[in-house]
Length: 564
Image (cartoon, rainbow, N blue to C red; front, side):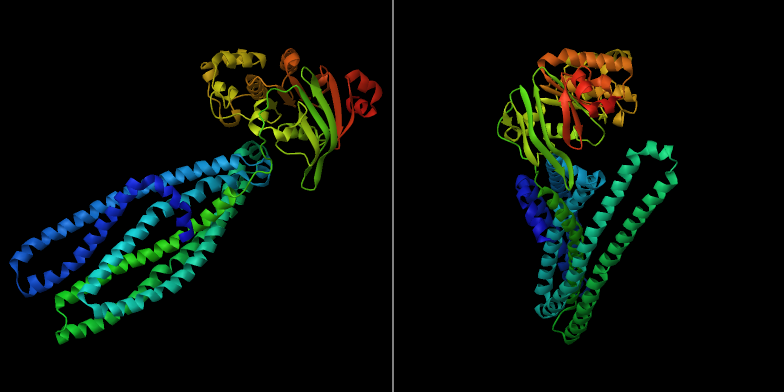
């Protein structure tokens, strides 16, 4: 628990004003609670026994004032600490997402999106209570307990000694329960991640679920994950529920001992009834904050488990490191015996490839041959296992990731459409220039359709672009790539969903762009690569042959087989 608090202490520096306000408010609550307990002595001794009417007149006023101070302090403390907690959680969530986005593509291949969503949302939400209300509660209840125990000691040092001997014994069982709760919390958060992952898969694959009529199958799968979450939650409830009875059992021993010894002192006349009842009131009032402290300590264990999961993510570092040089244009691309391995799978086994500005290079070959892996190395999604990729004669790893990706645009067969306007999708990540957006849409052969829409480029696209056809989505993606004015344009099966007319228009745009940039076309269809200056046939991670289309048809048997 203290490690969690220590981890977030630097964040509290930014909220000194609110923390001081919360601290003063907690003092008000503690002082008012102690005053209420102390009033029992004059109420019994002065009013009920000595019949002091003046005291009877003023005591109700003091009680109302004490509760007013306590209520005001509680409100100020709750608001101030809630603000601090919410804002710290906002910052941590922002920092975690930014950190995750800076990790390698391989990281996202290894982790399910549902698990990552759970870490950014649910795990951080569990920390929120710990750094705000729970921490404030811990301080407030401790201060209240100290103030009330001060009244206890003041009224009877002898009886207070008996109390202070018994109550600390409650720490050991509470500590054992809390450790068990922490282990359960880790398991619960993993189960919640599985549940979120299950939901993410269901909602991203609804078309397949409908097509294969597997609604009942998916519902049963979800019910199984949901039941696992329920079981672990109930285990947490059973374990956490032991804290209060254990605390109250030890408190009952203390209370029984105090009542027996204190009652004897009242009978003997060594302690007044007012002092004894003031002592009992303060003691029983102190039991509540002490019980709440033990409950808060147990609740902290969920936050500790969540914090450990979050820190595990923040400790990860990208394997692909950014270089120091800024890339200024791309005149030449060279792959020199470039090899790439994913785990035990070899994607590229030593590829040599050359492209100059103004050239159109095509990569062809069967599925899984390594064509897209070449594009991944060029974008530095991965680094070569062996060999080198060079830009303008310099090792690509010497350049910053931002400058490399700023000069390269890619359009893949898998189109990414965001839940935003058409203009925002085209200018994605950059300032929207209406004239450039229109020009990009025209070159992607989709402007006529966009212009016919009631809201034009401001038309809102659904999640994944479900209010567009497959071909329209692909053309929006092409427009996005063209909007960047890249030095290198990669078309990875980018025209696979287009009709012949649209494909011809896009290829004409590619031909017009060619003199100013390097274009890399990855395709299966021969028509898509006819305008290439040079074609590379890639099979099993190697370049089998390369040359012009006519040369390959004449000299490369594998190429002829591919297109026969």
